Amino acid sequence: EYKSYLRMDLVEEWLQSTSEKLRNGKDELLSRTDELITQTQSQWTANVAPHIRQSLLRQQVLSRRLKESLSLNSKILILIFLIFGFQKYRDTEAPDISLMFFIVAFWAYLIQRISSAATPPQLYYQKSEWLDKILEQCSHMTIPYKPPLLWGWNGHIQTVILGKIGRSINPILPYNRHSFIMPDGATIYYDVFEHPFCVAKATLIIIPGIANTSEKLYIKTFVRYALNASFRVVVMNHLGALKGYPITSPRIFGYGHTEEVNTLVNLIENKYHEPKILIGFSMGANIITKYLCENPARQDSFLGAVSVCQGYDIAKTDQYLLGWRRFARLYNWAITNGALKNTINLQGKVLYSTYDQVDISRASCIQDVDTLIMRKMYNFDSVDEMYDTWSCSKYIDNIDLPMMFLNALDDPIVAPKLLEIPIQVAKSKENVLTVHTQCGGHLGFYTGGWLLPDGFSWLDEAVVEYCTALLNTPLEPKVTCGSSSSEM
Image (cartoon, rainbow, N blue to C red; front, side, top):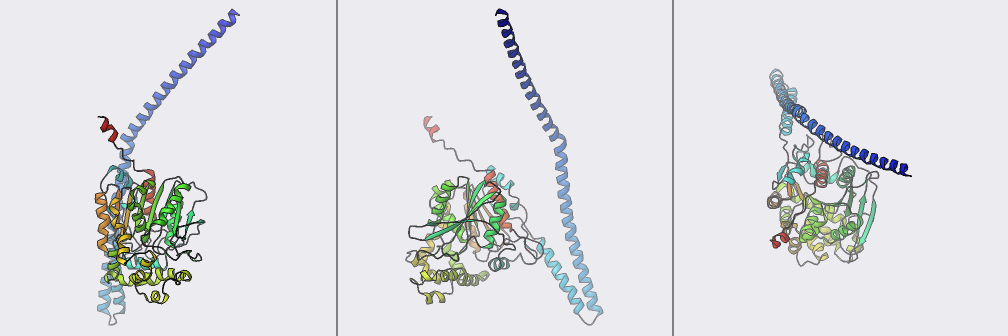
């Protein structure tokens, strides 16, 4: 028994010494590994990184030289066509051939000037470390936006093509349609889109433009692009705009009515617990901005927000659309006889029992429709009172969460002077980014080659890129030091 006890004592002693050696060996191995990593990093920084930087610089130089060469070649080509034109005009009595050369030279010159005029978007923001990190991940904010060459530089063409044709692709998207009932009996429908093979990393809540639904092509392409980036997308269909879904109370959507959005957000918060980003297009952008700012506590529910192509002040937009600058009056007529009257006629079985169908059919502008039906529908004494209450400009100074305001400078539906509103907000709020592109029209933002547009727009790519950056670099909550200062 004594010998056996001695043996066990030796075994325990051997095990302890062995485990101690293993721990020492592990610490030594980790130490050597750290030294090797540090040495490798220093060698990479000293030897490899300069070569990579030099390679990038050479690439930039070559790219610039190529661009200059193409510009020079195009100018030489124009000169050749002009010379041939003059030669043919001098040598022949019939000017047909010379005229052809002159036309080709003119178009070549025009295209060369237009293509060389592309500039990056104009950015307005307060410089901060956080926003710098966001912009590092948003390449669309720093490189020129180039639309289709032959027609994309005109805001009217982009706007009309979006309204009449939409996008060049029509993606088929599976979705689940849900509904909820408001206190006045109105039934609101919303659609949930999820990628079948990816786990959603965040939820995008989308409020479309006037009288629009998830069936609009610009919404469908945006949803498809967002799904590819692993977002879940929820789209609220404006009240009364869905075909085949009759309204259950005598009202349709309002330009700045936020109760439906508030109810939808509460439902989404209870159902999905990933971060949420709120996105609005045109009229929907006014709605989400007003929703966030009229009660600033609502901003705590979101990682950020995006406003696209809104007019900010409904009353001033109303006055602008009554004038002829940028043919605004024509767009006023088109919206009245398109989006507004189509929605009213779609729900006429309910609405025409309360409102006069003949008077509405005679309306020639948005202001007529608002006077005849909208202000009564939402119990306002006057149209001016309704516009003032529904405009987000009245509340926009309350914005504190990260938000991007995106507009095109050639948007014919938004008054140019109203674009000063988001600029001033960006200058006074540290988390706000205002982006103005040179062209894009109203919700167009087409990209492509000479003639045909791409399937996805610059708008789809830029907004999803910004949302991804928000997810990758969330804004840290401010730390209040009230308690520490009171203790001191």
